Length: 283
Image (cartoon, rainbow, N blue to C red; front, side, top):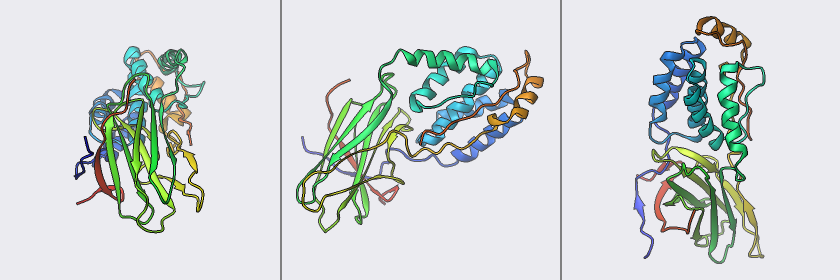
């Protein structure tokens, strides 16, 4: 069955207003109003098209808020998801025991897994013949519902975006450039049921750039897992915050801080492509 091309429908877009909502929730957390922050964060987590960074921020704050108010099991489950999409995530050893307990329980559940979650894109680039792109999805929890792969030769206008089911391996063939372009730009993302980005290797804004050799038909390059994520510091890094929180929350959360450290099964299915212009869908 031949591939069908469609214009329009985005595969992973940043939901409008999410950053404002996250800022609102983080302000509530900063003011130790965890009970008020939780419904805001729950609402955000159900939005469509969250970026990878937005999803990490949402899970991080939501898990912490639940932990501080004593919802240990809920916090643990959210920490499990957070570690899945950001395997290098760590918390400081001096943070509140109420938050440490569910975090380390979640971390322990991942210690039994031999597979590190993520997604990787590789390619053998050719200028005079077709290029094969291979995407490998590692998703032991089966959180992803689809894989999207975008590509274009440098200098061409739209990204061509192809969608498949969340299979372990996805391959696609990229035709040679129509001009003298030597750089192929690609990205791959694993999306959840809400089209939010769980895993990414490159992105529409920061694609993986692969140079085609001038004469040799080779040149493999592997994309990185989440290397584009630049996690900023948060309110949880402040010892003063936890001192105040300990005075406010019943049972008393010990003074501490929460620091986010930066980190930067199945046959393939039919791909359904979508054209993108830059980082947005073609009109």
